[in-house]
Amino acid sequence: MFHKTRKKLSFLYATLYFLLFSLFVIVLYFSLVKLMENQQINELEDFYAKQEHDFFEHVYANTKTLNYNPNRNFFYYIYTKDHQFVHGDESYKGLKKQVEKVFDNSNPCEELLKHYEWQEEHFLLLKKPILNNDMVVGYIIVGKSVTSQHHFFQNAKYLLILLTCISTVLIGLLSYYMAGKAMIPIQWSFDKQKKFVSDASHELRTPLSIFYSSLEILEVEEAKQLSSFGKELIADLKDEAEIMKELIEKLLFLARHDQQQASIHKEIIPLSTLLNKVSSKFQKIMPPDIQFSTEIQENIELLGDASKMQELLYILLDNAIRYTNSGKITLTLLKNQGFVKITVADSGIGMTEQELPLVFERFYRSDSARQRNGTGLGLAIAKAIVEQHDGKIYATSKVGKGTTFHIEIPI
Ligand code: ATP
Ligand code: MG
Image 1 (cartoon, rainbow, N blue to C red):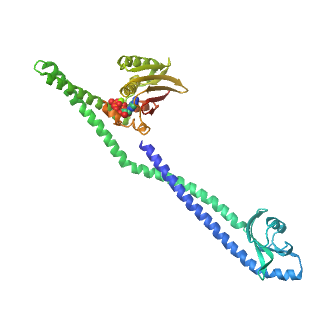
Image 2 (image 1 turned 90 degrees about the vertical axis):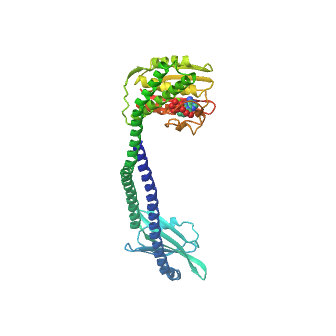
Image 3 (image 1 turned 30 degrees about the vertical axis):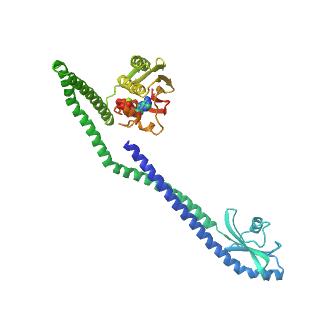
């Protein structure tokens, strides 16, 4: 139980950390990208301002020149508003054609910013109109290679992802360690409490036996002297002592199960025969208003403890009878791939959806069950027995319609 909680806690911490750190990393990454891009746009704008006057110079000179200089940081292309190339300066041969494709059919008045990738180079391109007396007369496309920045951010991205993963694993391990530390006092007090219940039940056993046998002696030896009221009182006391004895036995069983000291003697048991025997016993004590039937597949065997399996069936059938006023109870056994399945179905008072997970808790009894006898430990014991056989037990139910308990035990 503690191991599961510890694992759950560490997983929860690691997930929370992962989400928070990822959020932080994502915000950081995109802020840096944006900052860098803004700086580059500013540089392009500055460059644009410098080249703007070239437009008029070249339009008036009516030249169409494209200079090439591989050492330049920036490049630019000037066009008239009818998309006629006027002048340009480029640092990558053949880039002009590509850039024209990028801005193909764009409106000369429009201001545009584009990222463009060509021959493993990354470019940032800015297109801006040129105004003369508030009239658009042409436009300039200025650009710059941002390949190194692009690679820097690409690498930073992988680095941050790696960092997030590694730190999440480390935090997971650390929280597993810390959760273990935090569990120590809880585990300690839990063990103490279990030991207390176990010791108390053990210590109560002997005085209770003496008490019970004393009552029996009193009942026999003093039978003549006792008034009918006295006899009634002794009978009641014996009943109560019987209930207490049963409760103590149940508590002891659960305490031993918790301390993993419960002795379970596993052997090949003829399960079908066992179920047939138990059902014929129950057939005899079945109230007249209840119809009891069985569907038991023959020749099923199981490696387990016969007396424990019998006790398990007693608990479930006892509940079925106790919580069914009239109707039917069915006990079934079948073999599936790799496991045997036992079900005990009744058409009794049933349970709500909320009650279902609680019924296996110790001392849990529903409000409707409190009118009947019981300790609330039966199903906790049933669960312990099924766990000792590495199986699982669960219930399905509908209020007023009935309940079915399902047990699956691997063969
Ligand atoms: P005891 O320990 O004497 O068996 P109990 O029957 O009350 O007492 P459990 O067998 O552990 O205790 O059952 C727990 C509770 O689950 C019951 O009190 C009842 O509310 C509910 N329950 C169990 N079996 C059924 C059933 N077949 N139909 C409806 N409710 C049930
Ligand atoms: Mg019960």
